[in-house]
Amino acid sequence: MEKIVLKHVLPAVFQEQRAVLQSDVWLQELSLQRGEKVLIEAESGTGKSSLCSYIFGYRKDFSGEILFDGQDINTLKTGQWVELRKQSLSMLWQDLRLFPELTAWENVQIKNNLTHFQEEKQLHAWFEQLGIADKEQALIGRMSFGQQQRVALIRALCQPFHFIFVDEPVSHLDERNAQVLGDILSQEVARQGAGLVVTSIGKHMQLDYQKVLKL
Image 1 (cartoon, rainbow, N blue to C red):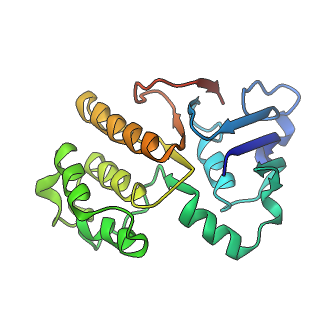
Image 2: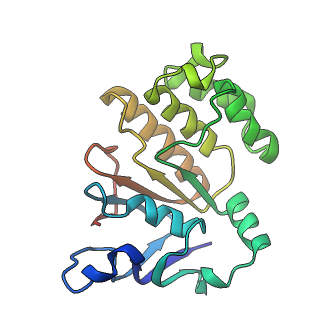
């Protein structure tokens, strides 16, 4: 996938505000290109997590169109969505969606065992870089949210992708760990020639964004 285009997209919940809404995303024609980094800044409650759910095909409560290389996503069949989520789209959700009863390593491996995309040596290296090497065998449910964010990032990188969306990825990280996470993410995005879309309501990774948009 080379391009994601949003044409006059608006969440259903905002329909009554469309006449006064000011946004670089909602009700605009916006193109997200493979290979570029985009930061979407938002206030709480303006729909950034909804946007991620729309693009990932989890929700359809919006007007307008979202196009993947010119194809309206509302025309995609289940099998096409499966392939897109395996080969083209990766997502780091704000609520992380980890399995609390599994260890950090098991949470990562449950995906990597399906894709066989990353070598275990690389996964261990990322745990080390992110300061959680000693937590590989810890249960996710007993880890801090900031530690869980780092595990979720590693899991999101356990697949090929043309675009990766990260929703509030460093909200609970200190500056050093946020920078390390940003470096790892940037390196993998560059390796895959992918597009990166970051959402934030304040704290965000300091990257070389080609676009900074206000939601």
